[in-house]
Amino acid sequence: MRLSPLILLAVAACASGGTGNAALDEMPPGITGGADVKYYDIQGSTAQQLVAEMRRLGPQGGRYFGEAQSPLRWSWRAKNNGVDCTLNAVSVRMRSDLTLPRWTAPKDAAPTLVAQWKDFIGSLETHEVGHKEIAARGAKDILH
Image 1 (cartoon, helix red, strand yellow):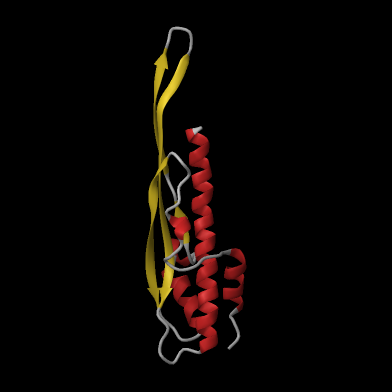
Image 2 (spheres, helix red, strand yellow):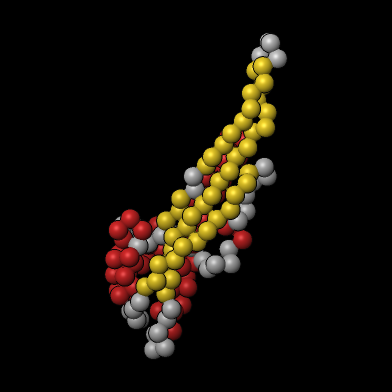
């Protein structure tokens, strides 16, 4: 079975893996927080059906197949010594929420489709984790 052009475009534009990605919970030193993954279940036995399901059920009304949100919160105390002000007790917290599709292959699914899905979901997860890592770099900049 040939991979749908839409899936090829998604793989080229996005990237990701499975739930065992250690990069999800990695934070720069001094940054607190973590990550959660929320899945939306899709069904189908062809690439075209899987793409249609992701377009129907994906984040932001199917505009995307996956999504990462990583809001940052920070706080500090200022100390005035009469000459200048210094910041201390700076803290930065980041919580990442990733949304990804989850497909359980039917028993009659073509082995090539299963392999293509594994490649696609691995690439999509990597891509979404990349968004989280961009936010983590920002958190580190705030901390410094």
